[in-house]
Length: 493
Figure 1: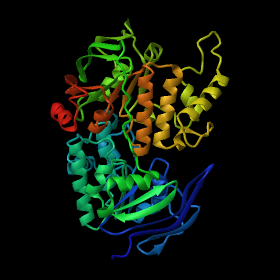
Figure 2: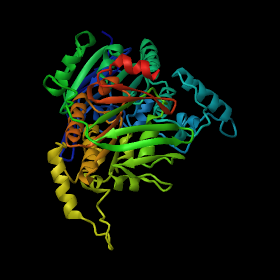
Figure 3: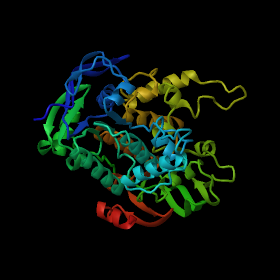
């Protein structure tokens, strides 16, 4: 066996109230894709942030190519050939694609920045990932998936020897995912060592050579891919077999809760019409760019419709001044596909839950702090938010627990219509089951749920029926009896 590119021994890391890593050992070989798995909060992101120099371990030894490293910073990690693709994008929305790819390292002539070269090489970097994007476009004009690819291209242009990929496919289509895997295999063949974090267990057999699983900050085992069945991985991750990932209760459909007629957003959505009933989970499926994200935003008043009407419980909700505040007053709640759009990361659990109602609408807008405290403690217990620390900032919770905080917000407002846009994006298999169980309980209580997902198995498991979107419009509908992975892909394409 080749000498390790990277060798960590007895790594420990403590945060206030939480032991993130406990005596973790880990090795990465040259020319290897090493999958790093575990539930949210297991310590995966903490470990890769230590490897990339963002965090310093409290104790333990760290070797790169056999040489002991006493202190590691992001700059030194980059000098050692270590590069990290973050789960949360580290890009600048107001800059162009080329400026983001070469951020801090723009090619120069003797007198100024060499823009033709920067744009040419940025275009080539994106082409290698299988996409054609104008390098002069502002990043904020791109979809989440396109921004994810820019993040990957930015990292690859540094030509790292050790590449850390933290949920790189969470926003990608199947075609983009396949192209990224081709790039990863080519890097592996060149001797690059790759640490690959993903909650899509189906990807692991396609790309990994070895698998290490963390649980509660400890390394519970490293196994070759030949021994890494999904059942084995899940048991290592959660400490037990996961019997039911999609706990969908049988619910009798109630009266119409949300009626949408002819909703049109200029250049994004066209003549969208559907009805969502009380107690129903209505799925929405389409390939990337079909318009699902814009549908969620338009229903919540984040994108202005140029035509169409929205009715909530029989009453007109939309108008020329339709906005998120009007949507909330009408009884709608939104779980956005990017959690950063739903949370205020540096606020604690309480304010994140109480944002829609903390200042009660009365002459002095008195802050209802006692209600906030009681509500926060109630939902921490009811939704099993872990750790149960009401004064901890949201940014320090795992993705699954952040999603519970957002759900608690809308449950606390009494929202009877939930728009869930990729509600399990970036969370682990155990947390997914918990989120689905919560959605199922809400449906039993009569909440109407619009569930947008790019994962066919989630819709097959949870949806009562599913709308198919293509090119910004609804092109079909599948009943629960008709739902299958193949039927969804066939209808969407």
